[in-house]
Length: 261
Image 1 (cartoon, rainbow, N blue to C red):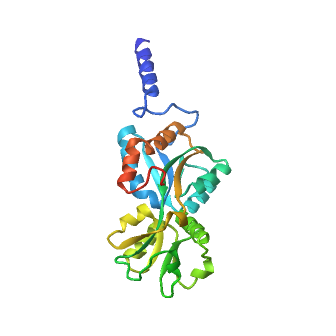
Image 2 (image 1 turned 180 degrees about the vertical axis):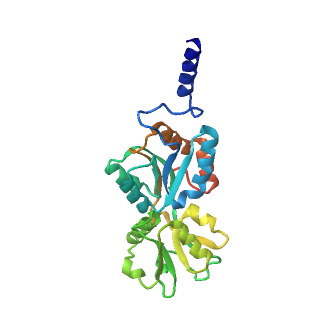
Image 3 (image 1 turned 30 degrees about the horizontal axis):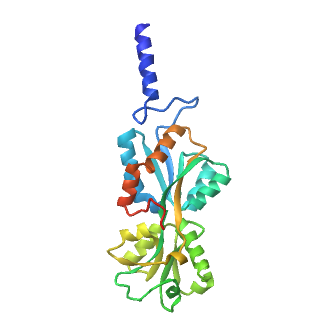
């Protein structure tokens, strides 16, 4: 009996500890890991944060990277998973309205920018220049990824309708990553991507900033899904993203963690 009481006390101590412990047992068997549905454009810092989180908390996070719209459809269909972090808070809003978000928080901010070939040989100075004859343009698909939806909102804000770009729009991507790759391959003259993503292609292209009054800033939010069976662990990961360690990793990857002016 004495040994049993000692074992019980040790178990309680472990359950009450922080990241170094397992979660409190639920009535259902818990999965061995957390499933994170994550926008493809956020993958570089998120991969690093997942590693840091595992080192600190011993909780494994498995990411599913894809376009934000694609991920939302997958979540609704599968009705499983723990966390959803798309490339724009708009998708978390939709998930929340659908009743599948338990809690949410803002992680970082996106600033859309025009990425052109190195040296800007076509002399693209702004959004209107994307309409010039012969300019090969690539944009995100608004029905698949966050950058696509935001880009078309920016164009609409600046009086540019889809038909205006019809002859120049040669490529629509499912993820923001594909747009940078088109610049790297020298297949296109200009694309619109997130500022942090543009930095990864600095060796192949140059940024043409969109003036703040003509731009639309987006936020990256993370939501804890109602399907989670490890809510405590899921909330720990969400908190880790906005902790000093998480913010430091995001900033190292050129992400903005404070509201842009």
